[in-house]
Length: 251
Image 1 (cartoon, rainbow, N blue to C red):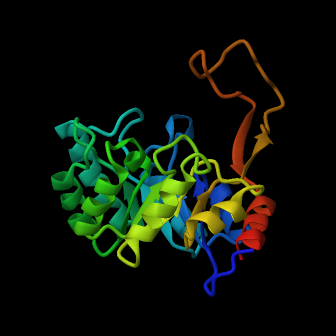
Image 2: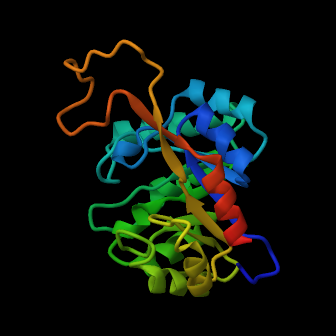
């Protein structure tokens, strides 16, 4: 159990109205809304953002990532990001989640600052693009300097447990200037350990399960994805029981 005086804020990653409702039912404090988790999450449709906004009353932070792959974007891609930020503000999002890097592995401070300014009064979370920067502490200071509210990180490693000491140092250095939110590989079996070592006040989890398709007729000869593909006759959705267990463990 988290021994702090404040309850840990639990942000749940969702990509559907179904998952948004389930996350809130399980006790989520905030949602990160995206699509295409197979590529790490990309920008959701305006329709999905509007529907989730209508469905739940907790804060919603929306991913602004125009494609999978790296975080070094062209002028056209940056233009799309600017349009999406403006659109999500109109739709009532509480925050946006983004990350832009330079080719040398530093934060693209100029473009990031422009998005932060245009996002206001929404909050801004810099996502795990920080984990592929050349120096996570350098990147953290850059983000503090432009008023970013939060950074999502696994400490520059594949999972939070592998980078837990770095995350703890990021939390220590950040103080009250920016929220450092661990995410990436947090499970029920390790959430207490992550919170204890890092001292983090917020965590980012998914808590999903496989949901079978409602299709009765199934033609398995015609896949809709590429060769490395998700199953056609099931999808992932948040399990409210898992979120409730995170809530219990985190305090």
